[in-house]
Length: 437
Image 1 (cartoon, one colour):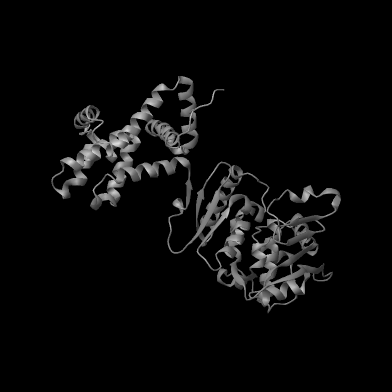
Image 2 (cartoon, one colour):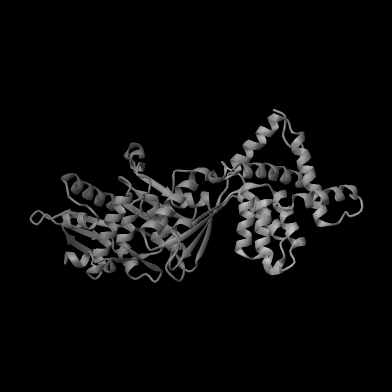
């Protein structure tokens, strides 16, 4: 019997999706100690879900106990009342040994669930429509004096709703238990619900924090917590999720979660789009637009351009692309020629001659894209040269703040980012560049 219960493929728990989207427990372990005057705890979201607890609030350990009890009820034909030993529950929930304090904590957990009530104010979706509903979780529990086993009676409405639900998911008990982190477990519940009928889900960071709920209020504090939770989910479960983080403006972050299937590289499942990365992508696109179309989509070409950008500035890379375009006679030799040109700066003398001709005939060709780009670059360089040392220090500090950690030590990227900032401001016609202190 015990062996069968520990079989992972058998430990699939049916759960109504409403009870995944809306919290039955709180991931903040310290919350129970914050209840004033023992009056209980009330949490309400904006959509019309009210959560009440007249005792200590259930947390991560309590939901694990409850899931195992629900699993046993389902295993026994959805019995409304089940009887089992405290030892069985603790061992099945991952305890290596069982101490008196562990038995007490389990009993305390049952008391917590007995004091929980939830109310859906027209927000419970039964698979066809939204309805109003209110129920508890556990009605009664006691210890049999002779056998010392627990006798637990579930709330009939709660259990029946799960049993008859057409809007549900099966959860793997062992995988959820292995997540360990309260935030990872709560985020897992929300993602399971959110991927019910789609492969991608987007939400504002602050709205997600409210939905969980989290104590963190600012995007800067929410982001690292969610990233850590996603890493834990991907590492400890078969549920694989990619996370894309975008920051459209200061103080705001947008999360896009994507459900992945099959074999995935767990080391590259989080992409954070910083302003710097957006600038680099724009720069890379501009440089690739100079490459002959038949070579533009080749990964090797993109890689050699990015490698050159790590060591040199934009002008260096640009002139060598244009040089290769003009000098290569056989298209099949383009990649090798460009590679050597970028490594050895074959274009230097040729470019100096071009610039001299351009300056001598500046008034003749005003609509050429290359010439317009050179004019813009000259303005940026002039703007940079006219900055005071103090303003250059401020510009450098801004560039370092925009760069991700792994690029701050690469001086070429720092210099390039400083000029990209000036270019942004120049294109937006912002002046003055720095306000006087």
